[in-house]
Length: 102
Image (tube, rainbow, N blue to C red; front, side):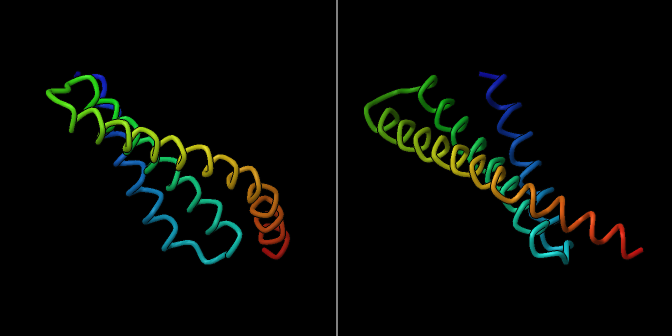
């Protein structure tokens, strides 16, 4: 399905973008916050890839692999969102302290 392919490419691009941004960030809380965004993008990539496999299935191996990818992707997205909410206040506080220093 072309919709899944577009989402897969966008999610992979977002993962690479956030991973590079993680390496360029010096502040520890902001680094973890950006890293959780990368994890969410990676989970989206893996989950949609699994959905794509399920929709284009040809046998039982495709069903098993697609289901595993879908579950791993969903777990990665859910845990990433939980971590995102955890690190957001610390990253905001760190950014505010950096703004006050300048």
